[in-house]
Image (cartoon, rainbow, N blue to C red):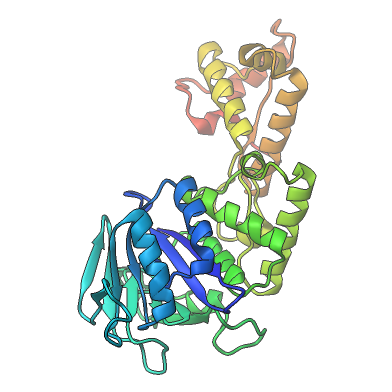
Length: 375
């Protein structure tokens, strides 16, 4: 699910956009007139179709924002019953209703005890309650929770609260640790969205975090590369981008949250949750040719051979650097390491012996036989 949070600095209010990443159908909760241009920018950038707007209160001021959005994009609008004339043209929202958005379904529910607003709206994993956003385990099958674990149904996060130590901002990582089958990338995004909602990031860090989240959603939760981030932030210097990502990462760690990572990076704080190394696009490009030549020649290729196959844009130095980083990652996970042959392929007894040990009889290109054990 695509999710964006908008803070109204003039009134202190908050609004939210969520959408199906499959159908691109979107909805906005508690829209603000001051954020209309921001909504338009996000809708255009992510190629979304606004199909609904929701109000948690019979708020005449926000109703004007709803009317503006309906006039611009169409769709349906819902709000709890209010004074006659204050919410003209809006459909009355009552607990028990549902609204389909492709593969997403919005449930209309009563606010929890002590919760703000007259009506709340729930989608899998989130409930919009007045000025608060509640992240919960709804929508996660019970079979995914470990037997005997007490599944935490909700970890309330008040977007209006910015004070460190606020009891409503409990450690999210601990709250959801009992919920199974949640990808680590999704947890990283949720932690980042929490930091955005709490305004703990600087304006530049917030912008980088927002682009990071959008890119993750576009890539199906795969971490973006620094190059992809730079393309979407043309006015941010590449070196500055790395510094900002580093600063965000440390802030997340200091807050007890999972740190964001870029493609190919293996943060030591996340390594314990991974079972194999992740390779960058350049490393995958190298490995594709490496395996191709290995199958063709029945021996490990040399750096010059790989460079020649890749073309003039990939010199031998580039190839050797990729081999070095791949070996380092394999070593970290105690995996067999990559082999590069010598440049001179006139077979000596020593080279012939190495090839026989590296490629046993009956070799068919399996990954296990393409690596040399590390001692």
